[in-house]
Image (cartoon, rainbow, N blue to C red):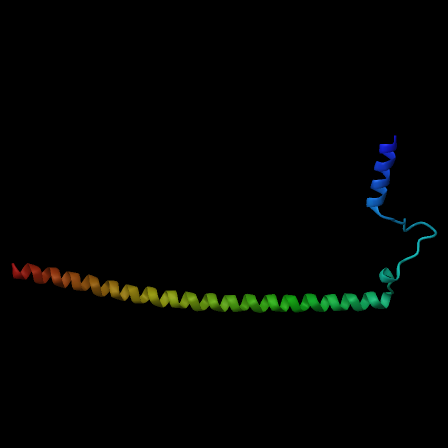
Length: 104
């Protein structure tokens, strides 16, 4: 029985001194006390922070879109150049094979 009392004491000690907010003798601590004006200003501040973060996100998305367009254009130009080189090599091989036939 003594062990149960000790266990109950430890549980009570760990759980802290919680007051029920609906009780008549509950007093709001100064650090938690606020008024509507403070809450309105906090809401405005948070809305401003959200707006700033959204704008920063949108800027990053636009930068990435522009970077993607630039990279796609470079790839397109490189592919065109590779096509030209391939065409040149194919012509050269055809010309070389005709030249080899004439030599024989």
